Image (cartoon, rainbow, N blue to C red):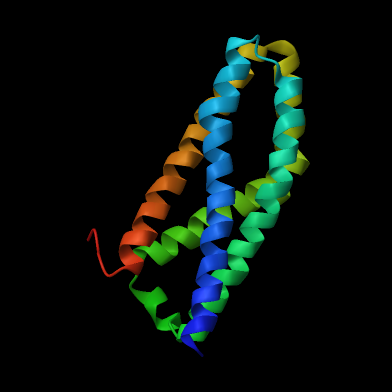
Length: 155
């Protein structure tokens, strides 16, 4: 491994995370509240978030590939035994991947669509709460990863 190889993979990893979590922040803090103020338009939410969903699917997979390459190039597989923030990254990635590739297209989309026809305001409230949960998890993971990767530790 050369330092340059690792640095390139880390750069790609950080870019993937910025696109992915930055998009989650936008949807959570800007898009959903704006849609709630303008009438709880779930159909518009679906249309706009679909575009982000494609970006998120791509970004999460680039994050996985680059993360695996960094572990491989640095020979750091043993760090998985005692590094909580690596596991937080894997868990966060797993939750989003499950949501993006399995639950949302096969289950959640239909359930929320039906719920929105009956209770649009309640559906948008639920979406906002779920997104705040995912964003909180993501930000804790990003902070832990940055601090941990630079030698710090919370515990």
